Amino acid sequence: MIDNQGKIKIGVIDDHQLFRQGLIQLIQFLGSEYDVIISASSGEDFLKKIKANETPDLVLLDIEMPQMNGYETATLLREQHSCIKVIVISMNEEETDLIKMLKLGVRGFLNKDVDPNELKRAIDSVITKGYHYTDRLTGRLISILQNDDEEPTISNNELIYIKLACSEDLIKLLPIKCV
Image (cartoon, rainbow, N blue to C red; front, side, top):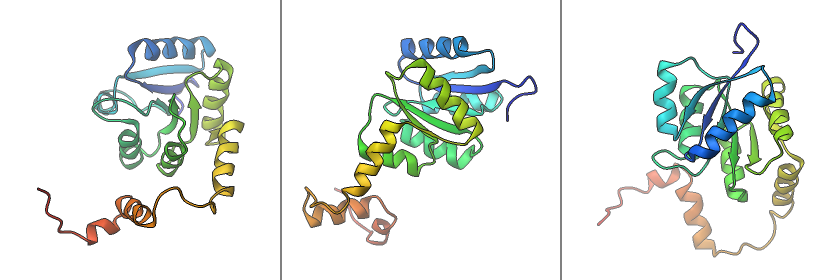
């Protein structure tokens, strides 16, 4: 929850120290209503720090990180700290990443080269409305959905494998011995 001084408590998770520190300074510059309370180089680092600190209202999360990537972090945040809202901020804009993160409950998705004012709008929107999706992201998702009936570029067997690998149905096919 927003603290008793009306500040939005933010966590920043990114493995690139220069980017992380720059983002923290930018957030502080955007307004006195923001307070970065946790800075972490990985999801694992963040989860350790959250136990010793108060819980942020919102986390800015990178996808590609060592130790615990953004997907694993988003999953654990959803399971262990569902009150924390997550905005992904990444250079990676693959459609599969967007969809996977949305399924994990991410409330917004920004590219790292976003305008600072868009970052402010995203933070405010996620806090007030619960989500923020740029026109660019919305357009890409609509395009994906509209082109859903196009011919797949992979074989049916590959598609079946991917569906099984992404579901709990694969477990039903076990035991599979790994050599």
